[in-house]
Figure 1 (cartoon, rainbow, N blue to C red):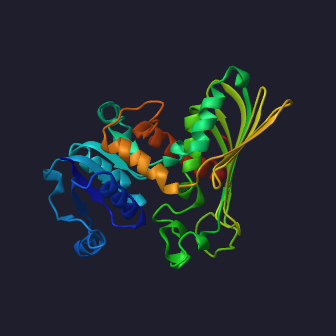
Figure 2: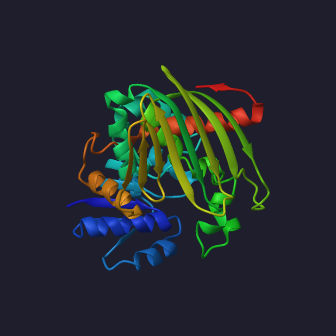
Length: 330
């Protein structure tokens, strides 16, 4: 029987727990929160017995640990619980704090790199899976241009909440646009390999009246690849959009990650594909593979600990570049 520990009681923790129950109703599930009353209220949402863990979880062992706490606690929980679970899933991103030094340690990475999986589910989007296969074809021998455009007004993220009180709007909890939309940075790492240089400009447009940057534009370079790459992230647009444009030797691709569509064009033909839109399917697929202890493969290309660290390193470089107005090398 699977013995699962879930840390956190927010919306993403609720999504994960719903999927876990659907995938394995026999699992022994425990929930931990610093606020025990909150954990008890959270457990009542589900038609299944959920254990409430108190202090002392570091003395217990679980087959699977899911860290869905606030962003600022991710690294601390990874550090403290790395020996308490056979498989560990941690929500993104990994904050650039003092604990990250331990996660970057060679011996820690050697033991935990593939054991720890980071929650970058966009890798499982069917349009992205299609693009990965396309880019391996001979006709796409060289990639010349990659552009990512992503935005949505922060007011629309959680419609029943005061957006100014969301952690997305606060500095302490890593709420700036580059931390909130880090999926796009992981996607570049996944498709193109290690990022080597970053030049970034961030702005607070004052449109939302929050204290963090709500708009970011970045130019990136990659190891051993002459690719022109830019990424634009923002939290002010009146509409939701999430697009990826790729230009190769023979083809032009436009991926729409909101509508799950792919447009492929070349001199001879144009091809349009639409995949089923089911956002939760990505989360459920990831969790199914995680609970099954699947190893990294083409069918399960999860983001490991090193991938998560690489993404956070890029974000830290983006922040540094904006402060110094200089190119930052990684």
